[in-house]
Length: 522
Image (cartoon, rainbow, N blue to C red; front, side, top):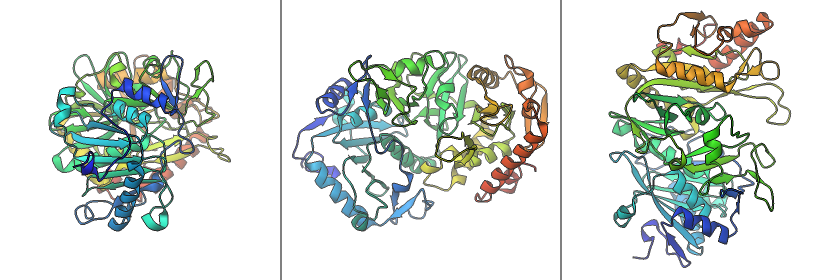
């Protein structure tokens, strides 16, 4: 059999099997795929795609999975015959390229990990995946047998009329053939999230809850989870020198505890600061790190983390090995605390609130945050964003599958659940101010340590939340959001507006009555 024959390939060009990160870095420079920053990070540009293309993601509709997949605009069906033509199109393209083949594991728990083989024509994409997933030990590589293949063709365009795609860009998952096709985009996040989507399909039947969350472990062995959409501070808050980092983005929760799906971090790099995020800042500058769409000065290699000249969605991909305080095994026990993070640009959510079991399910299914104004032309007010289970684009199954599993595990293990606002206080964006990171860190530390378990609380009348009245290191005046607004009547109007947005969003969600009733009261 020809090399890669099990992937349907018969390559004619050079093949590089399981090159080391150092070798991949060298190949990327040889091929002109990027430039080196002043301290060694590899800087690449993915334009015109500088983010994911959710409208170009498809799942093949075939008998083995069609009854399980929740077909929707994020799980668009593709006919098997279209997939077959597209796969042939990708194979012809890859067969003529210099190729980099990388064998990795998705998931660190040996009981549930998925062996994945990446085939890509770009060394830097292989370096990215080498950072983001788990590399087998050298002694294990000869016996490595992939369960899944990713055929990656970033420079290849699909033909919608022949391949059933929406555009020239495609991200297609075939669960029966255990193959992922990605093309028409250089954005590396598509590789990471396609694997996550696959695990979200494979693991629930095995009793494992896949989660879009960060995880940390305290000195006493206590585990905390942080759910949150982009911009809510998930990676920043999980990188805490007082706690060991299990992972910053994707985890499974089995009958033994939590385990990381990945071997690295994919941190937002815009505005990185050595004082506010020292660990991430240091990791983003190291050799082996891949910087996506970060502005670099010609000649000097100086990195400008504050510049959004290419995109605001600048990213740093680095191995967990460079994080000083991390859990090397990627595994830990059952969580004792969960925080749902929201960056509320409307300024009405409290900095912290305790959630009941039903409220936890309501806010998990809502997946709320609010983006600031000014990120798009003509947008002058905050914009509410709801993403079911804090990861709607990556859920092939009905969201209630994940919500029910989370609810059962919270109840079984007595997990404290909290809603934490990392957004605005004293008014909306443009009027109030963003809650300082140091205060949010103090809130998180108090919540996960149990320091808030017995403090007095006050009921919040609009959202039905219980607000702690004392948090060590946080001014009490900040804890009740209505009291921070100069005009309480303006707060009432804004809170009623946000509550209405919650209710309108939840009208699209099928959930038990107790969960539905745990939402806003007015």
